[in-house]
Length: 284
Image (cartoon, rainbow, N blue to C red; front, side):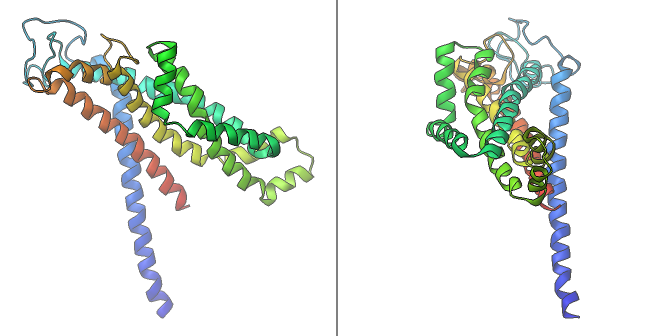
């Protein structure tokens, strides 16, 4: 009887935890789906051309005609914020997909082989994480020149290390389990053991980090756009829009505030999705 009584709170806690997981995951999914819809079909929601000047509507406050107001060239800010979803979602994917794949594959190989290969990789990781990520990216982009392609190159040079470190740790754990040893005893090639057995069971940390990394790369792209090192005017990109409004914060706050809100909401969506995936996998 006492066992039944003590088990009930655990069940309630599990159900409450499940509700929290579903809320985080569902909220992240909803934000991501809305962001993707706006990214693929911006013209369906934007009432104006984002790059057309209207000198009769310069620096107008938010109104029914211009929901987010207009900028110093009379461009509709709501349309520019909506069209910026296309470019910023591209940044989230293109800046992270290559380092995610390359880092995961290298981490899997190094984790399986070990030895001197792991020692060399460890020194590369130590050298990379010694410096702040943003400082390294800015330094590389400054050398290569402004633009999104150079930003992708800079992120790729650095970011793969973090995926590799996560995957390496998981591969080392999985390699000690019986099924990996059985594959070696049966004479399977290392490539088969890595790609068909170890890697599928080691993808969770890299997948969760990818969600967070996309949010960080949106912030990074906006930061570089603000500094003039990322997307270049007149492109509709949130960092560029914020930079356009920095000289009008006291008289036309809406130019910078609404793109900033879009950055926060989209980044929050990716973060919630990553947290939801983490909690979901922990309950299994």
